[in-house]
Amino acid sequence: MSDQKHEEKVRELAYKLWEEAGKPADRDDEFWHQAHAQIPHPPEAPEPSGSEEPASSKSPLTAKVPAGQA
Image (cartoon, rainbow, N blue to C red; front, side, top):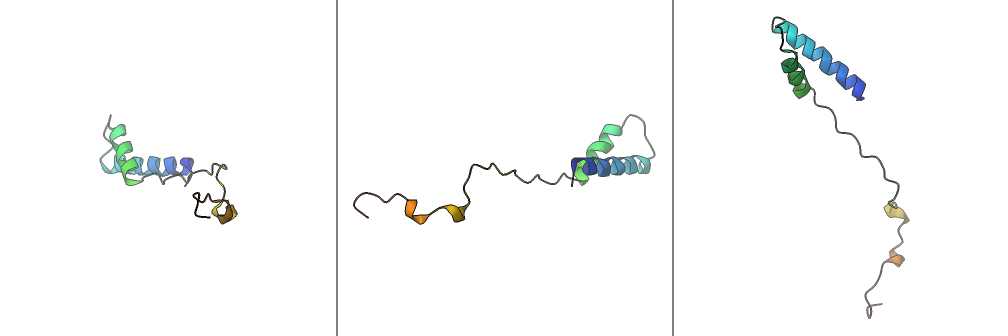
């Protein structure tokens, strides 16, 4: 879910919670935090660093063998 879509869902829920509570004044932060708790942001997928070689490209022949065991 994009950040924009997530914020929109939180905003809509916060508004709904505020309405259901009778539209009290000066409690907007309370409803915002409550909505955030009910709609947690999905974790971001880690971006590839590009510095690691894929496992399939590593050759077993390049592994170092301790002296005397080759």
